[in-house]
Image (cartoon, rainbow, N blue to C red; front, side, top):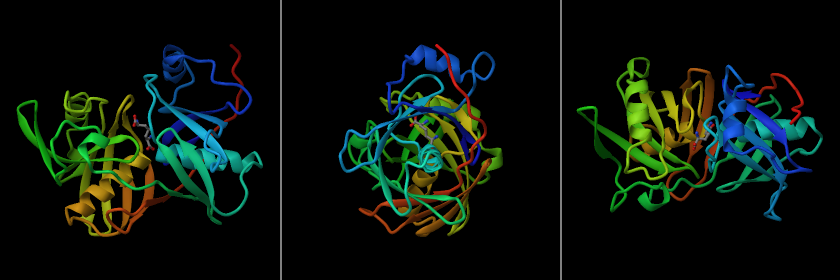
Length: 269
Ligand SMILES: N[C@H](CCC[C@H](N)C(=O)O)C(=O)O
């Protein structure tokens, strides 16, 4: 499946746990010797009785993640096709907490991605207090960024032109910076208008992807905090458009976007 070009293998683990360790996941995710994906998603029985199902998130390098915005839209669409997701709002359990999904009449999926957390300890980011901007030296350049947790760690760098951003240089440098103890996803955001941004994301454990749902949420809320965009933002990513709505601090972020099936298969161990 894919959500705006961010692609996934979705494995039904409702009856048995995932029989793959990190090394096996990385082999399966390799686009030359495996099936290839940005993330592997598992669908599991919920551990939280208030949720219908749980989903697991594994990056292509085998590392686990706490949230995946494009992925949960695909999980919702997968469950609807399987007849396991009814109309209206459904709570699903992510590794970092519950989210709420709704499949719209046009087939897009709307998700309550939870409340963004700007506190450094939650990201985690080695900073004493939360600030709208932080700065680090990357390859001799002083780079300013905002930071937030959407259940997974994000840094957001505002750039003049996303198309010319040094994604392949600053992305891995900041992803692996020692001040991000769990690494981080790095967004490069160009403000086109108060309700429109262009975004590219270097994802933790993957590299640059066609889209990042939690990254689109992170960019919208970081730029909103700095007064650079409003509450409703259209986020243009290389793989497609995501719509983000955030009423401000302490409120949940809503994300709306597509989910598509590519092929079905079976794996034999
Ligand atoms: N690379 C991310 C997980 C996938 C997030 C992304 N695919 C999305 O749509 O939110 C991390 O390690 O936190």
